[in-house]
Length: 114
Length: 115
Image 1 (cartoon, rainbow over the protein chains, first blue to last red):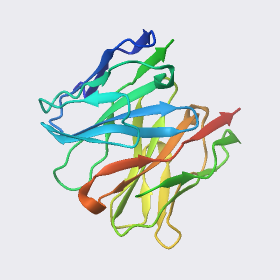
Image 2: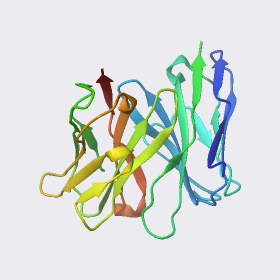
Image 3: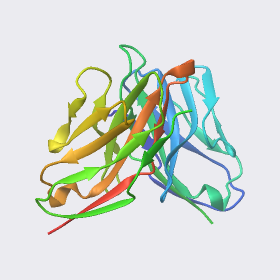
């Protein structure tokens, strides 16, 4: 069982470049989210989705776009990368059935913007 | 909105000593609490969760946590740590008020177990 899969694991971008971080889950979870992790800041929510076709902003959405066309996939797009977006990005998924459940995390994407 | 405070950013301990990692959350009517562990260069893994029922929750790797509603705390404990427990630990709260279902994390506590 693959769980939550993120690609790529590492990426270096130049300022102004765009890219898409991929996230896929095979657990049929309705809820998916993106976090960024910075030293001393914990995990901060960027965007989340409660189902296909539905997305909403989290705590730090500026500079990022998301879409959710299928239950399985939730890509995160950086439109014009900035050095402030250098971070480790985590995708997570949760089930919404059966009450509150824990989140399952991918292994992360380490992004450096130069 | 919910917030989570982890009172210690770093906790050094010796092997086989007990440890407590502290977590406080802002008050809410409906709250669900989690502890996650992150080993170096890996994703987050669930240690334990409190949804309802007994206030003492047991998790994996010998960890346990106690939910204290009056003190709005959810401290993590282990009676005897191992070198392999060296990791970063995150407390998280799920606030269902308003239907947002957001999972809010603390800033993390780095546990270093020394021989």
